[in-house]
Structure formats: structure tokens, C-alpha cells
Amino acid sequence: MRTLFFILLLSFCASLSYAEVTVVLNSGDGTISLIDRHTYQPIKHFYVGKEPHHLMSLPDNSALIVADAVSNDLVFLNPSTGEVEKRIPRISDPYQIGFSPDKKWFVANSLRLDRVDIYRAEDFSLVARIPLSSMPSHLAFTQDSSMVFITLQGSNQLAAINLNTQKVAWIIPVGNTPAGIIMTPDQAYLLVGAMGDNGVEVIDWRLARVIKKIPTGVGAHNFMPLGDKRHILISNRGADTISIIDTQHLTLSHTFPVPGGPDDMEVSQDGKELWVTCRWLREVRVINLTNDQITHVIPVGRSPHGLFFMSHAPRQ
Picture 1 (tube, helix red, strand yellow):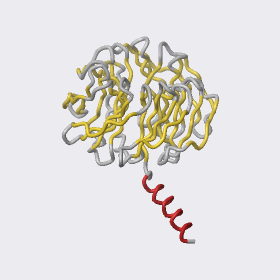
Picture 2 (picture 1 turned 90 degrees about the horizontal axis):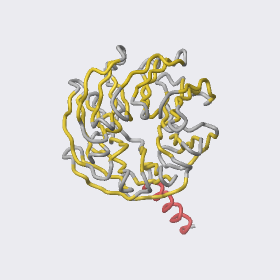
Picture 3 (picture 1 turned 120 degrees about the horizontal axis):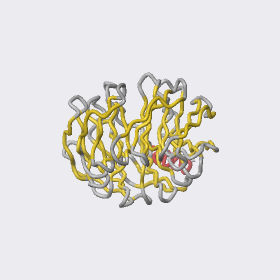
Picture 4 (picture 1 turned 90 degrees about the vertical axis):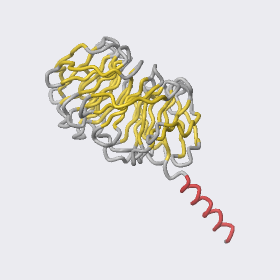
């Protein structure tokens, strides 16, 4: 009886030690790395599918969706433990994914196939397939869910799609090789990372025109809100830096170094810690945002891309 008690106690303690994980997608290997969020130690490494690039939680945070672009499916994970719960097949080339704020639509960018697919969020049934040229990459929604904006890496353009009609509203030229896109907290502007122009383009989306450019660094790539409803981080993948943009003044706040091709990011709930995938070094780096110093370097798989943990800062 005493032996059984100690076995159960050890099992309980082990489950507590992994109460929260960081999920990292290794797009080059088709694997997921799980890292203990609090000890920074690797836990597990397993195959998930071909080219998992991006991930996001369901609107109610009940599951974490991993988009396998080449396997053409969505894999649902437990967002706290990283364990696989189910798989939805026949989702064509889901490179980047997103739910509209009203939870009505699920949008998937098919980068390889030059199109955007719109699904009903309730059952992932296909509603519309919209061809675009070329290489639809990242996406952002208006808060009222009327529009979704798509960066087109191959044609140096930005497209706006009306979600009520599932039709293209407009397409405008932007900087070279546009990638990440995000709406400012006041919903006034879109920010686009122009990798080929080494900075951020500011777009007045109501007027459909670029109004300003903010130099940040070579390979300006992807965004993450700092969580204070004012500042937004952008990774400069070619410059090995991360910049912080002040969205109230649309200016560069400051920049700090992160070696290895910084890509996707996650900010801790208290705003003090930043986790970053480093695409060229097979590493995740953790940065103390109070002094911009790297505190942990964690080995992962080849070409790490998206990452996630539950206790993240607000997205706006």
C-alpha cells in the first residue's frame, strides 16, 4: 500500500513539473519540441507532419492548432501539455491560419498554391477559395471581422478580402517581400514587415495606401504585441535583431540583438520575458525584456518557426 502511495505521489509531482509547456514547431524536421515553461528544459520531441509553420489556439483556448502545410492537415494539441488530441485532414496547404474576431471564419493562407481558403470556424467546412498572386503569407483581421488582409510575398502586394462577400476588396503595392502583418491597437493602421526593404510599412487600410516606412533592420519579418496596448515587437531575421515599435507615434522605440535569425515570438504574461525561435541555429532564445539580455538558449529541431505557451501577454 505504501509503495502504491509513493508511485502515485511521484506521478503527481511529475505532472506538476510539466504544468505548462512551450510548444515549438520545427518546420524543417516536421517535428514539435516541448519545453518546460518554467525550468527551460526540453521535455519531448516528436513528429507531427510535413512543414508545420504556424500555430494558434482556438478562440476559447481549449486547444492549440498546428498547421501542417505540406501534410495538408490541422493537428490539435492540449495547449498546456502539448499532447496531440485530434487531427483534421484535407485542409489544403495551411501555411498561416487565423480565426476572425467574431469566431465565425477560419482563414488559411496557401502559400505554395497562391490562394486563400475561407472555412466556417464551427466545423472547418470550406466556404470560399480565393486565388491570389503570389505566395499569400501572413494575415490580420479588422476587429469587426469584416475584412482580412493578406501579405503577398511573391508579388510585393497587400490584399484585402471582404469576409461578408468572400471577394477581394483591393490589392495595393507594398515593400519588397512582405511577410508579417498586424493591426495597431487603435485599429487605425496595418503594420507590414517588408523583409526586402528592411523595415515596417504603415498602411492606412481605409484609404488603401502606404503612409509611412519605419526602418527596423534587414529581413523585417514577424510581429508580436508586447501586451501593453502600445508597443509591438518585430523580428529582423537578417539583421539578427528585434525591434520595438511605438504604435502611438509610429516610430522605432529601440532594437536589441538576438543571433540566429529571430523569427516567431511569444511574450510572458507579465511582459518581462520574450521567447524567440532562431531559424538558423536550431535554438529558442529567452530574453529578459527589462535589460534585453539573453538568459537561456534551448536546443530544438531544424528551422524552428512558430511557438506558443498559454501564459502569454495579451495580443493587443
